Length: 200
Image (cartoon, rainbow, N blue to C red):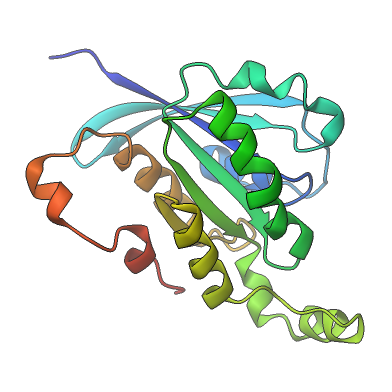
């Protein structure tokens, strides 16, 4: 048998968008009840992806600006990045292009990235929709997100709910797939994540 492959996955995005919740739900099958801002955390999980045993090394980073000088310590040897934003937070969505893309292009210029919309369960929350409406706001639409992702040349896009454990496992499995060397046959395929994930 050959050596088992390790895939380093780094999670980035504004604070409080749900990065840690995604990690905890995937690794521990448990949604964290209390919000505790992350400084840095590392999770490891052995999975079989498309018949290949892979060790996923998942790095959860702090999104707060006060950690801007420390966060780059997580970037060396990264295989794929996951940029998270919350569908009820316009600022976290805008910051994908204004803050996170410039940072990862500087430190990880050739590393692919997936954009993840967290808290997808809020699309069915009338109380959240009404609260945002009273504030003159709205949930970010799938059309807005897909258009933005294509403009930013993301390797893919997916909506997840850590609370309902929706698409969480699919996200990390697809992240691993995006790190595999592409065959000639794979290069002919189109669509990728944009056409794979649908709300269940």
